[in-house]
Length: 408
Image (cartoon, rainbow, N blue to C red; front, side, top):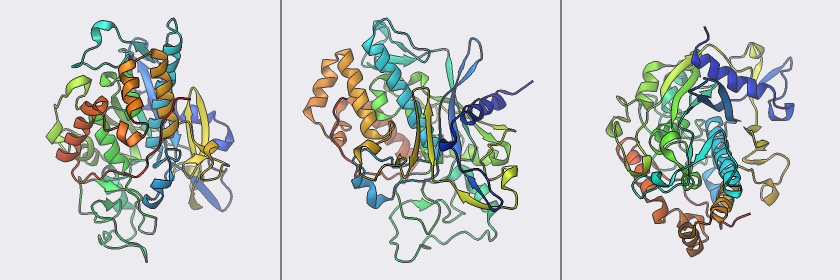
């Protein structure tokens, strides 16, 4: 009998398989093989146990810190596969909310309207919730970068000597605080930043291990989605990794309540937020475009520069955090999952719902960084503050991308 982990992996892999070729790495040649990580989020209905892929993403790059101020909300800061899949999942939720907000008689297989008796300051005022009978799972074709993959990274080195902390590419000034992914192997259970390579432009994007660890407290919801959807049903139940990428003690150290997350284990906050640890399980299925693919044997490995975005509403191919084929600052190059378009769609939902309190807060400031400091996000900000201070010490915000939000 097929395990649940294998079923979840097959669901994501099967969804990727039917995407058009432009969303995939180039076909292998006699000389080289292009590889890319894949992640996807699957919902399983507890009534019929049927899995459905809600979103997926591929990718492995992020935006250098010296370009963040130019993003204007239209360029992704981080397009590692796990982050793309989560952003595509949030886009799906907001799109479903919009459908329900516009048409009171519409129903959704993913979200529902919350009853009046469910709404309170203590329990949250979000108008929607993910269905109670849906469980969320994530499959990733590679161990998340950062702490969960440190043992794998050490094992793969020809010379297992850790990089000195100050080893950098010539003419590169070290950013304070966080270690890169491959610096100081002896330091385990700590927050690291992307990218791992010493010769890559520096960023303040935290590793996928760290971001997923934090999601155990904040849920999968992004800031804008958290205005619309109650967080209680938005936590991952399991993270599925290929057996070759699963190191049990590393995952427990990184994500588990007995590891670095112990300070917030059993923590509950207002509004449905709580520490909700996911289980990490192994699958025997491998991704055809992974580094371990049979097609990659004895060929030069090259990374694919395409990041694929999928949910039932959108399919996109991105390069350098924007739509393939568009210039860097072209407004038409903004992905559907970029911050600006996500916030603008959220405003559409709020306008359709007719929520004067929220719309009044919006009108007081059109700049996103000011809006995110408002009382609307007080509980969420407290969750992040406590989790990063107590369990994920050293977390540095990737500030500098500010923009105006407007519906449409």
